[in-house]
Length: 359
Image (cartoon, rainbow, N blue to C red):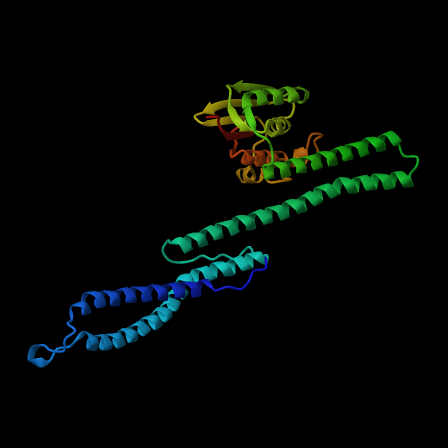
């Protein structure tokens, strides 16, 4: 934005200090004039014939007052300029950091020393903002790189299948169409997951009162055929757990958790338990499954995009695209909730979602 040039803050503060000093000096001199010289007689006769009269003292006092006012003006300007520079020095560092951030350097930090005051509070807030922006940009760049890689894979497979079909006209057409359909379905699923993740990250959705127990029952009913196909027992327990948010996104969150629990379970058996309850002003959803043991160092990475818990899931027909728990984490965060992951001692995973309850 183009603005007309104006006075700097330092010059404004300097003029303010100088003006305050002049006003104070003027008031002091006025007090001396009113309450001292008014009692000096006009007559030039006094004790021993020598007495200062008002005219003489006025001339002497006026000269001294003029010199004093000049000194106060110079002192106010010089002292004000120095004091304003000292006071605004932290602001110069904050401005330099803001310019560096504006040019794309988000790694710079102010790290202002000294005791807490308004400038240091502003500097600490600015450092926190830069740290979050730097982390967010790095996360977005990593996500974009992973998304590009994941999307390129089905497109490359489709291109390969089409090239093979063109070079070998005798190839089984039904087999080719089936493989193309599978690859296309995976690409569509990945695209929809990316759009949903972006939507939940922005927080642009309508909110309403939602009962997580009803959402859990709906998700379990939808995934019951998958659980029966894999020989997994699916149980929904607990009581009402009401919260305020998007019914669609919360249903996707619970569905992703239950599907993840069913897919990453013991082969040919196992159980999945979905439990809801209210704890004070918090609505709790807990999804627990039996499955292979999970290394502790793997848990923090499960909510990152395109991370899969086990190598077995990579070749499973329900492997997904590695965005299930990332979407759950994003939806939970968009609803001001928390997501906790813990490994079961006997194998498997316990996922606990805590969302703000209704008042």
